[in-house]
Length: 197
Ligand SMILES: [Fe+2]
Ligand SMILES: [Fe+2]
Image (cartoon, rainbow, N blue to C red; front, side):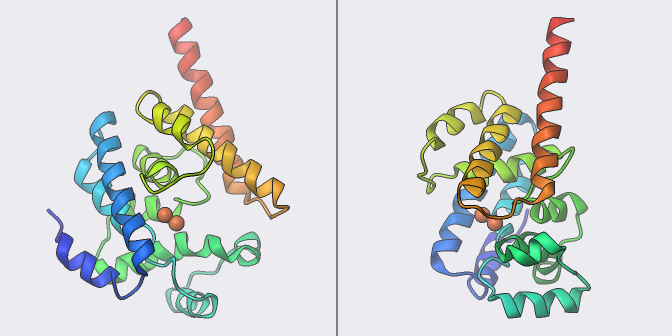
């Protein structure tokens, strides 16, 4: 069992109150999803709690820390710095909380862009991040309902909304998000083919 109190105390030095509340919500939601889909509940709870540990770092500090860890953001990430906190967060979580479980570190690293062939834990964290109880964007209720029916379709709906939002704002779209979406579509198609066979 992880030491929740110690983690919260450490997190308070890195993220603000708003982000801490969001992290607690993601942790709660991730645990529920893990229970529902037969994943490791404790691992989901822990990953949810620490997934945004690098979110409040100012860009210069984030780049400095990245350099220390040998992490170099790709061009799209560099031009859309909000994306840095996810891969950087995996390095930071390893240092702050002594975590070396690659499943947890990957789920932190890919929680914003997603990626091709996401693991169940990666899907859970990404989806929990979209639908935790503090989220209130248009369409969130539909995704919340779908989340406990079909995780792939719920996550696809989350990515679709997020992609539309990025396009509407004229911002750069990370290619990993397109890969994540295509991969989910193919998984859904495979599941349908199995059902029809
Ligand atoms: Fe995040
Ligand atoms: Fe988050």
